Structure formats: C-alpha cells, structure tokens
Image (cartoon, rainbow, N blue to C red; front, side, top):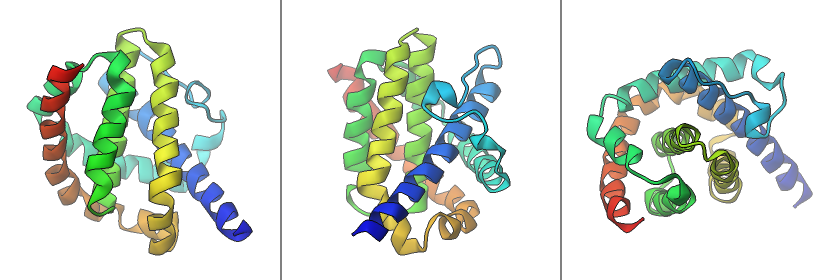
Length: 186
C-alpha cells in the first residue's frame, strides 16, 4: 500500500504541475492582461521549468485550440455563474468519466477546469479558483491515478498525448450537453 501511495503522490504532483502550466499558458493566450502564477494555483514557482512538463503543456494547448473552435461550448461555459463552478465540475467529471477514462477525456476535463477558473477570474471570484483547482486535483487522485498507473505512469500517458486530439474534440460535445443542463439549473 505504501508504494502505491508514493506512486499516487508522484502522479498527482506531475499532474498538478502540468495542470498549472496549462492554466497559466492558456490564460496568457486567451487574455494576456491577466496573470496567474503557479503559487496562485497552489504550486511552486520553479515547477514549470521541467522540459517534459513544458512539452506536455504545449501538446495540450494544441489539443485545446481545436476544442476552442467550438463557439457553442464557449458560450455555455461563459453562462455558468462562478459560484456554481464546483458543482459544474463535479457533475461533468462524474458523468464524463463514468464510462471509461482515457486521455481525451482527461484533456477535455482539464480544459473545462481551465474554463471554470478563467470564468471565476473574470468575475473576481478568486476563492473559486482554488476550489476548482482543488476539485480537479482531488478528482485526479481519486479517479485518474489508477488509470495512469495502469498505463505505466505519466511518461506513458505523455507519450500518447498527441493521439488525444481527435478524441478530445469529440468529447467536447459532451460539455455542450452538460452545459445546457447547468445553464438552466444554477
């Protein structure tokens, strides 16, 4: 059990660094006037210096660029109230990953998490940023770690990241369906 805990801690740590790098880079692309640091998202100032993390973040940005072409998805996420962000995250995460976890679904959930953080940032709900970040990392630890272990660790998952593009685009449609439900419930 101890070895699994150590492995899971490493999985969460790497996932958290990639997540923070993704959020920071996506924000600098989407809204260069706004800034977040790794510390703002619960990380360390130098954690984004790792070349492997930088490479994965860049691949994730390419994937999310494809997902960001969906204007209906953007509109639905922007219509969510920031105080509902945590509920939206957990609802989507449960429905979204209940069937089968795969790289495309993880990337799409990562992108949704960024969108909820951006929404909270633009609505000056800074406490929601940490809540959503915490929810994402909790979800990684509780639901995604076993899948990552089964794949052979982050290294194996990272090596397949470019293959997720097609899956991620298809999965974005799921966000639209869930977003419609949340649009009217919050």
